[in-house]
Length: 77
View 1 (tube, rainbow, N blue to C red):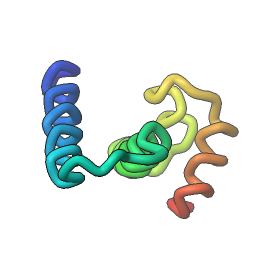
View 2 (tube, rainbow, N blue to C red):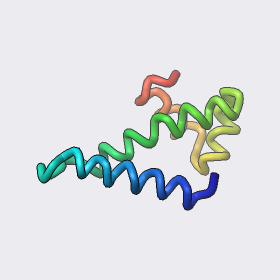
View 3 (cartoon, rainbow, N blue to C red):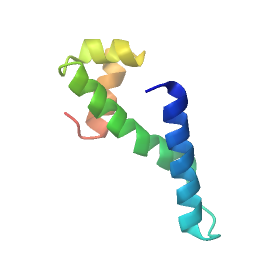
């Protein structure tokens, strides 16, 4: 799966979201999308990294402490 494919999936999901709103204006859309994407991203990366936080943090391009904070926020640890 390429970066372009992921972008297309997100775009399609957002278009469906706006269709479902039926003209109602969204609120807090940016934070909602980030939280919706961040949790599965962290979970899948941790799984593929064998729950090795240092490896997962490296793959994600973030500090291990930041990863731990985000895992805790999403109740993944």
